[in-house]
Each structure stands twice: as structure tokens, then as C-alpha cells.
Amino acid sequence: MSPSPHIFEVTVENFEADVIAASEQTPIVLDFWAPWCGPCKTLTPILEKLAEEYGGRFRLAKVNSDEQQEIAGMFGIRSIPTVIALKGQKPVSAFQGAQPESAVRQFLDKIVPSESDERLGKAQARLDAGDIEGAVDELKVSLALNPQLDAARIMLADIAMRDNRIEEATAYLEACKPITRMEEEYQRVATRIAAAEDAGHSPEAAALKARIERDGNDHDARYHLAAVYATQGQYEPAFKTLLESIELDRQWNEQAARKRMVEYFTLAKEQPELVRRYRQALASLLN
Image 1: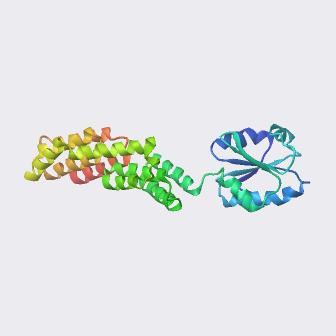
Image 2 (image 1 turned 120 degrees about the vertical axis):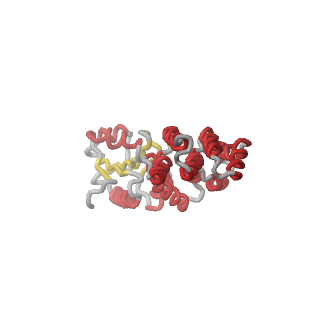
């Protein structure tokens, strides 16, 4: 068959890097075989087919036991075919003898990440790279594949809170299973939502909002309301409030609202996408 990135031959030279070290990132399935082994001729094609089908969720490492006796000795191989799965540099599962495809699938499904888990990992990578929309797309696909995946809901709630979308974030958390609500990450996002709600409904915030309702040009009230939000780490409503003030009168108090907004951009540096959007909004307003 043509060369595949998911299948490779193991030698003493590549064993440490491509098998042991690589198993930290991707499960490695070792197939110990030999040219004279009849059952191997049945099992190996099944493993090769599934390596392609699983598309990189594991890599098939083929070990010719006749040629690589040192490696076979490391694993105490006494009969072939023998299949050993490695994760985190350690054997985690194994079987001997030819097996039907259904049994090999069951073996693999216990050691390889599911497609939904793969999507979850891709979402985190996109999030780390600042691709918020891409992360959301991956998370929604992972939930479609596995509706029980509360980790995706928690991440979606966390992303929603970047824009202070409290109702959306709350809905994601409310859909989580009771046992999930005991987890640290769930509690972190839930605490963030509670802080946002407190900031929006505190007596100070309520009083300032009342002042703004009575007088839409009360820039001092808007300025201090933004400070209340920022104190709670709720930069989205803080930016919105200051932007409203700038739109009404950019020169108020020697451009105090603009200056404060720029200060908050620095404080909100852990939310680069949010800062980027509001920098653009501010620039559009001032130009």
C-alpha cells in the first residue's frame, strides 16, 4: 500500500522518538509481526485499514519481530501477532492472536480519543491562537457529535462571558449534568457569571443607571458605571458604556471617556478579541 502518515515501520533508530516520545501526543499501536506468521497476514491489514480510517487518532507502528529482536525483547514478546497500545510512554492495553475487525475496533476505541474529544482539543488550540469564531465552530460540532460533552458547554459559556453574554453563558451551564457542576472549571465560569450579575445589579450600578435614564447626557454617571463594571472584570459593558459617552460628546472632561477606555484596553489584555473589536469601534467613531 502507498506510504501513510499514520503507519510506519519501527527500528531501533526511530523507536525512542517515534514510539516512546510520540506516545505523549498520540496513542501508538505496536503491531509485532513476522513474514512467516499466517495470522499476522490477517490482522495487519485490518490494523492498516483502521489506521487510515481513524485518520491520525492513533499511529500504527509495525515491528518486524525477526529483524527487530531487541525491541521485541523489550516487550517480552513470546508469540505473534501481538498488539500493544502505548499512551504517555506506557503500555495501556494489549492483545495476542488474530482478531476480527469488530474486536480490533473495540480495542482501539478504548485507547484513542473520540472525534468529539478531538474537536475539543482543536477548539482549545484555536482559542489559544485567538480564533474565537473557529473555536466556537469546533465546540458546536463536538456537542453535535457527543451531546453529553459538558466540557464543550463550559468552554462555550466561558467564551460567551468574554462579551458579557450572561444569559447565553448561563444557558450553557444550566444544560450541564449535576456531576459536572462539582468540577473546578464549571465553578470558575459560574463564579464569573455571578460576578457579572452582581456588577450589573449592585446598588451602585443601579443608581448610576437610574441617573443615566433621567439624563442621557450624564457623562459622569456613565464614566463611573464603566468603572463599576471594570472593577468586576466585566470589560464588555465597560467599553460599551464609555463608547456611548464618547459618541455623545467625545470632548467631555478633556476626553476622559476615551482615555479611560484606552486604559481598560490594557487591563483587558487577556481578552484580545474583545479589545480588538472595541479598538476598531473606537477608531471608527473618532475618524
